[in-house]
Length: 540
Image (cartoon, rainbow, N blue to C red; front, side, top):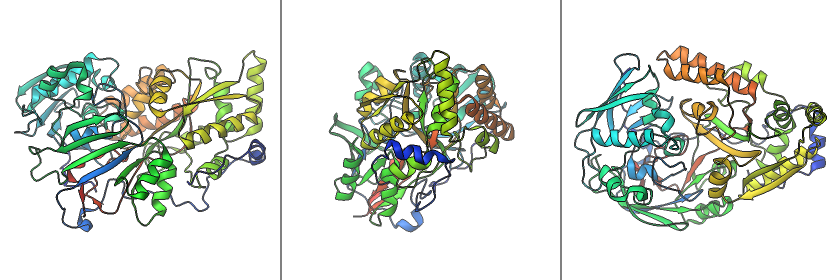
């Protein structure tokens, strides 16, 4: 299994929530996918086209608006960090079809169908503190994920039996069992759980538990200062390993968690680029000729998490009732500017891992059936009323009110609670402190490790605490095989079982986007919107 040759570049307006009465009237028939006026589509999914952007210019500071404040730069701490790849760089890179390409590591290959792996690093690379980026550094950082069970990357290390530095630029991994997708763990975005980001061992020694506030890596930029809830400043790394890069002198990241304020900042020119989290920014960006939008509709979705450890959603009848009660057409009209792209599965309909059988297994919108399920649950002694928790972003508040109205139509009383995004992510979702909650999980490139994180019994993204031995078996088989056809077949079974068990409540594809001023060039990104910043430049 040898890596593919590395190419130089990878190439709704918020409306008022419909009243409860309208929700009932909209429920007379099964909803069909909304199409009228829809402009949302895949566009520039992996970045711009260097052939049409001109000769890169040097200098300038890029101003970026994030959708939340960063929790930490420590790769073993769970959080979404859109700036981490500027400090650390990736060991490997995911290609458009989830293939693995070289980056800081020149190659990663297995001679025995995934039982052992050899990673070869680019020679002569140093961290920004001047210390060598070598095999020992990779081992030390991987060991941190092994030792820290709470690390989002821990699950990626569970099959590592031993590691050794063959020489300064070669790491050998000996696994407990064949793992055909092992290399993918070294190419994943920061927020999904990744082994790709290597911290300077000297900095780890110096800062200890404070490394998350004092990051030192081998990326295109170096850490300068950080005032939480205000700005994060980075400067060009003069000793960056890719000769002639980066083009920018520096970057400044600003947390802009309010959707409307974030949009106003890009329109008004307060920032040069924003990371969009919802269809609100995406649909507006696509309609604005003065902006460049980057978006790829792939796997993943927006969904609601059911808490399998708490009533009422430990009962499948109630999970099915919620799915059948959500009128996707009404949701699209009221909150997605009639542009919602419905989701019935973890995989997009164009994915090789998707089957019609999975779509057929997904419960259709049916208010009468939903009411019957609720009454059956109530008759058995259950209380169907629940609390719905989500963030206090305006579109999430509107979504919560929509859920409240939809549930009222089937006889369920819903209490709403809203939190700022950082508190919501950590204290609510990741702490399993909910009955029903909302989440955005995608787009993303490859089925592993995302499905493993979401569906496996010990998955770090399995916030609903779902557990099924059959699912765990399928996930492990898909991870183990080196046969592409067999892997595809297994993920199709995983998709079907996920829908049969109603692990989460899919309702829409994900809309993670990057929206920039037209003079921002050289954008290279994942569909998850994580970026490679070395090639970015300003045409000014």
